[in-house]
Length: 57
Image (cartoon, rainbow, N blue to C red):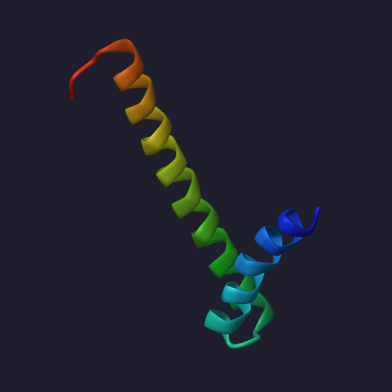
C-alpha cells in the first residue's frame, strides 16, 4: 500500500513543481505526463508482443 501511495504521489509532486503551483498548469502537466506514459507503455507492450511472436520490426 505504501509503495502504491508513493508511486501515485511522485508524478503529482513533479507536476506541481514543474507548474509552479498553478492549478491549470498542474492539470495540463499531468495530462502531458499521462500521454507520455501511454505512448511509452504502448511502445513497450508492442515490442514485447513482437518479441514473443517472433516478428522483426
